[in-house]
Length: 244
Image (cartoon, rainbow, N blue to C red; front, side, top):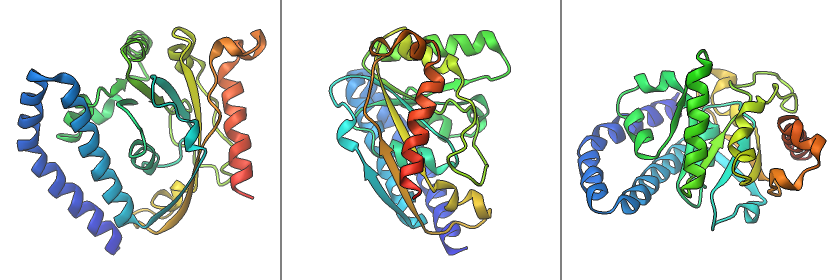
């Protein structure tokens, strides 16, 4: 319970202190938008690192050298916990937009930070709006901003972490329309921090593995047609190795 109290207390203090910071960030953006992007990124990354520390997350990272630092990429990961975002976003080398469900827009201050960081909000019930969100993600890639998507669409709760939900093929249009690199991420044990024993936060050993990036144009015609299933298989293999 102590970890939960510390995390909640930190979040409340951080969000309250964010109010004057938003004004400073807005002013920076008027003069130098890129500087605002980077400062917002580093502030949120620092906050996430503190949350990970307070939560007792012990993270082993594999294959981080596979993450390009000189071009925008599409990160694709499995999804089991809120901590998937906390732990992966804190490691992004450059500005990265995460795709989230539109309900997060109702969370004050947090949604403001997400807008500063070019995050996108997906309405899963509205196909037309969902298409607009994908088109916006394509524009971000073209403008040098990476995008991270969890294509299962929701958190998996299966006790077997290698059993992933179906990857929505529409998520991969961001890559097939730009031929950007896809970086597969296999995230192991994050649900042990919180979701497996709500409302308690407990220390956990977590593994994040970044697989070898690939472009849609490098795949065979059959693999490209089912690129979601192909990427899902790549991530499953990494999970199986890391759970042994």
